[in-house]
Length: 144
Picture 1 (spheres, helix red, strand yellow):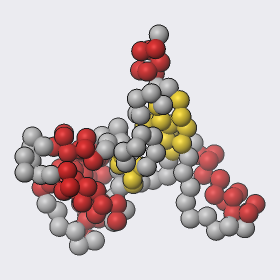
Picture 2: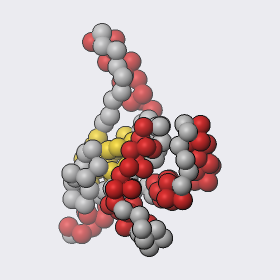
Picture 3: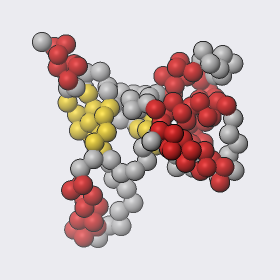
């Protein structure tokens, strides 16, 4: 599954005219394999051993490119650092108030929210997001 996603992402970069450098490949691979919604700093730290000449700015610039061609979404909630999500299909997030962990979940019933909002308000909906906050199982254990 991760290999298919990586192949699809590489094809998307090619068709968008984005050059596939070893750093871009590694950043993308890290994002696809990570379900933790990493920050740019976390990505940088995990790859600095493999790419000692790569800077944090390189990571940010590549994430911006990925965002522009629709490969990643930037999540700007939870703690103050942006986190990056390689799952670009519609889904929602539950966020731990204590440690900042973000977990994906999907609930098909919520797919109708945009349609209902349009019908009730007359707006043309472009997008929506939903976050739920609480305490993750690890933090619950640590409290006891």
